[in-house]
Image (cartoon, rainbow, N blue to C red; front, side, top):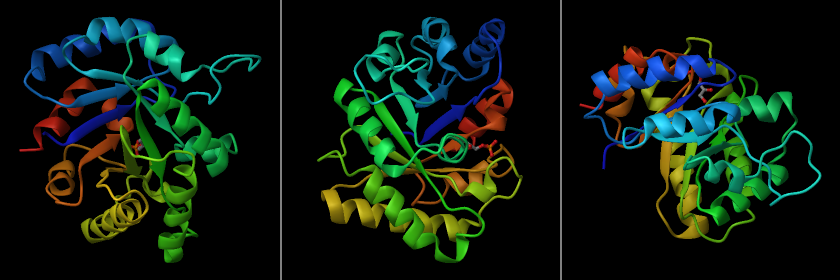
Length: 239
Ligand code: 13P
């Protein structure tokens, strides 16, 4: 299977920008497989309709409950109903700005897996935590996966916080080390192999080098996924 190329639009773009994005992907990226874009939840239905058969669509967050008095939240089932097939959980921006704990994230992972969404669980250390990145990542992975008993539909994205939106990319040796470590942790806990994506300032100039690493199963792309042409170039760099 092709390595994953997943975009994260974060809180960017508007409904009217979906159509030009999809058109460019149709034109330039129609032969590219295993591409997805995670968009703001109000855009899920529209982009799912337009992207059908071309690329997969995901949300950037979900709630752990099935339904109820959680004003402003969106359940995993609601996301699935829009036609989306994946969800980002535990992105560092949510951990940081919204104080999401591993325990809270674990409940979301369980619910998203239960309804059949592919979960992209994000982990990664801050700059201060870099010297002890192994213990930080281990805690995040173990605790965030503590509510499930198999890793069906679970993918992990290693996104060092210091590399997100900064133009500072982790070295290939750091990426390989972190990914091997994550795979080891998951294998020890679940007895299965997990796919691990790299995220943090990925663009088409550096993506080939990262995607060539055997420890890397794909990339999670923020800023560079907003430009459809650039996003397709990243997909093409899989070689
Ligand atoms: P950038 O690619 O903009 O650094 O963002 C990475 C990211 O946070 C993807 O989830």
